[in-house]
Length: 76
Image 1 (cartoon, rainbow, N blue to C red):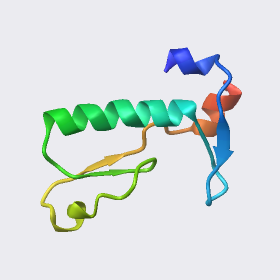
Image 2 (spheres, one colour):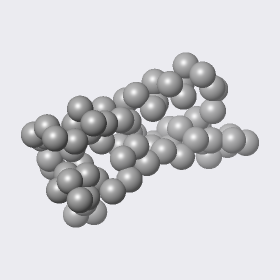
Image 3 (tube, rainbow, N blue to C red):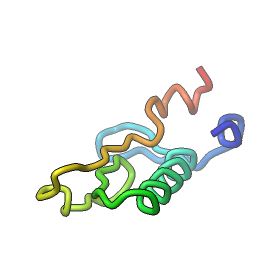
């Protein structure tokens, strides 16, 4: 994440009027890859398409890859 902290990122605004940037997607990809390789639970992530297998699952992962994107972007 430090790699992204001081870097210029592509920032877009999501439908809920919150920013999302390259760091969000990089963190998401890393976390999803790790969880997928290590565990068999479905994943609900803020930055990925919903895995509807979660509805019937006994256990799931819920992921917010970069909580505080606005502060991260503004480096506060």
